[in-house]
Length: 418
Image (cartoon, rainbow, N blue to C red; front, side):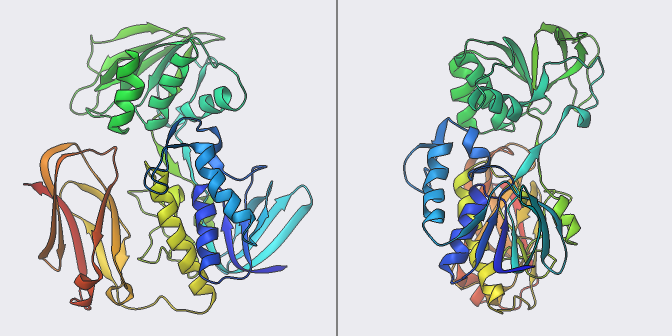
């Protein structure tokens, strides 16, 4: 049995930032456990630029962004355990992990969950048809091309307009493949607007909104897919089917927080995000277990992951020192037009400076405003030309708002007309 102050599960962008946050806050023994052979997580295969604009005020590729954090971690007296898989996590914060050297048990004063997220596979979609090769998630194709130097195919169709799917549409086109179309079930894209412009529009790749794949054809290798329009109930419209010959179908139909260890530790999960329910300190329902990054809720910008994770690491270190996070908290609830708001509760007396709320809207809405109410009283209204589900919204509430209302019980965020 090993003892550490803070154990961080996952060495991707969230885990790295959490480790630095815990160390900065004074934790002596900080351990990062990573199942891969190197740190960096998913960023290692994200060779496109667009990372770091908020954090470093410059555009970086994924590996360049993670390298800056890795360098700081390795030079900061932070222990890392690579090639190590956490098998069990108890509510007592005892971890059981396995590596090439065998099984070890680790007892932590505080634990940070930063395992990232995973893609929805074909099995979650119920698409009728045969089961030939050539069907994979967009992230798998990204690893094939960027890490392994392998082309998944030459004639592709992409189902879903998540950011990885949009980026892989451009990547395949740059490598000489033909991307026939990107089909999206919803009437709006689930990816960032900039990716639609830079990855689809600039390469002449059509985005078919309110369309989905209704048939898969081929015996050994994929030969084609049938795409149909859907109605307002998201059901295929008979007679709108169109056959697209292809040898590759990439799935970019949503990301799910990795939550097996969260469940094992007795952490309560949100049905809206799939990740843990946390308070203003990023502490879950399991005492001393904190969550951040895509293991908490799926982000669209890694800069926000790092910002959130550093704070979670600092709070985990404070817990390891014996600081309690108890107290009466105000419930944070999504109102009209808002799918979820993070965090799920806030103790007003714990807010020292500003409190950041992160949220996603349910549908695209123009000329609207986000309205924050505390116990029914409007305290903030932020206007914007366009709100879209594919882009996370961020609201900063001043500490003064909470200082004046130490006994509030409800905070509601809604989307309203200007």
